[in-house]
Amino acid sequence: MKLATQDKPFFPDNFIEKLMMVKDLGFDAYEVDGNVLVNRFEEVEEAVVKTGVSISSVCGGYRGWIGDFQEERRRQALQDIEKILKCAGKIGAKGIVVPAAWGMFSLRLPPLVPPRSPQEDRAVLLDSLGKLDIIAERTGTVILFEPLNRYEDHMVNTLGAAKELILAGGFKHVQITADFFHMNIEEKDIARSIIECGNLIGHVHIADSHRYQPGDGHMDFVSGFKALHDIGFDGYMAFECRVLGDDPVVEYRKSVEYIKQCIAKVVR
Ligand code: LER
Ligand code: MN
Image 1: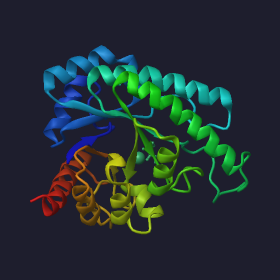
Image 2 (image 1 turned 45 degrees about the vertical axis):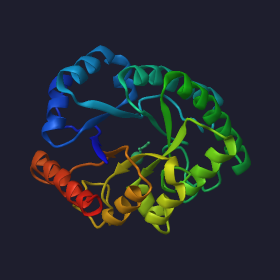
Image 3 (image 1 turned 90 degrees about the vertical axis):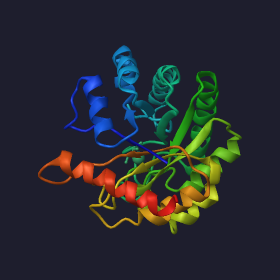
Image 4 (image 1 turned 90 degrees about the horizontal axis):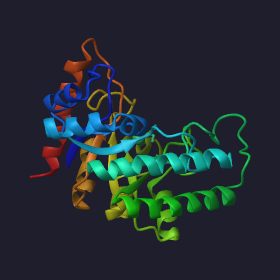
């Protein structure tokens, strides 16, 4: 199990310096924003070569959502993701993390009634994932489809729901991103859900129970990591969190150490 991190406000902007800091903190790779990857591609490519730190994956950085209520914005998302995946494939990143939508609608917050039926949501998502499946194949990448918690998305909240859509569509280049923060809210038993998805799990996001750095909250990472180890997961776990503490660099370094200790308990 390899570790990656998303960007942090305390990382340098220069890409070589950024990836050097990523390595120095104890990470193997960097999860890049899609817009940054496309617009600063040469710089990112040079930094990967010079530092030996790879780009594990891409997250965000496109307009609209693959399950957008507005058709035009959905098309925009698919077009932007295609551009991002061309760059991701060239640089050796596994693929892009995509939720159905983020912050578009929640069934648990007013106005409570969405403008589209669950059947229509499903048809839209199957269509988008079908189109992305073909683009992923062409670019040598994978769509890392991510269930979000009920307050951030109303369409796909659990690993099981993501798996069901992938199997229903027969997609070969769509896998699941298992995000511990969302799983902590939505899964009855995180370890069991991971086991049930098996090799459909393609990527992992980690944060502690309060979305801050791992080790600072009350998440049980070890049982989840054991399940990942049992299914033979050999992908990246990318830190997706804010960092609490007076000195965020010191705290982030401690967090990486903490996660490495959790991994050591299951990988012997
Ligand atoms: C948002 O909470 C999240 O988990 C991101 O990975 C969005 O894709
Ligand atoms: Mn996530």
